[in-house]
Length: 155
Image (tube, rainbow, N blue to C red; front, side, top):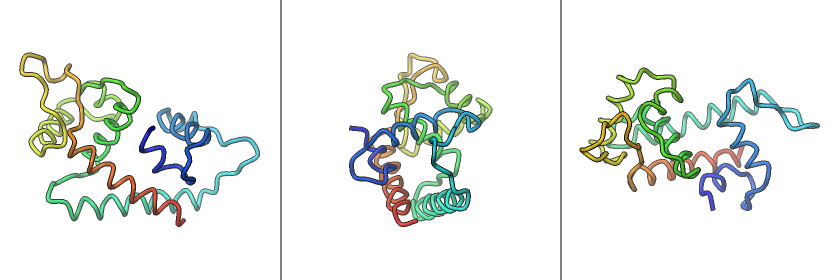
């Protein structure tokens, strides 16, 4: 069972629309098409995005860790990759997040020190070795995503 699907889905039971939304969220925005016969309310979408951002900012502010947007997006990418049973490395993350690899490398180093990302094997090139969240990284992202999901239900 994919935990984040239950968080994102409006109903307690995941359905096909949750699968479609997650699949579309992984592709470029231009490729996202509304379901036939359903209109997307831009104001509601904006409200969801703003509320989501406010929750993440509040949670990060209360955290003893210094986590910014890039760190948060790294964690989100790792959650999705782990759920898909995909291995991603720093090069993949830099491309997905459109961040220079040198900058991403510094973020990964900080997140390793903070205990959010597992330390790679010393025998491997860090840029090529898989990047995985720790239990603490998973717990942090899961807690925040649950709060975001609860807020989505009320909007």
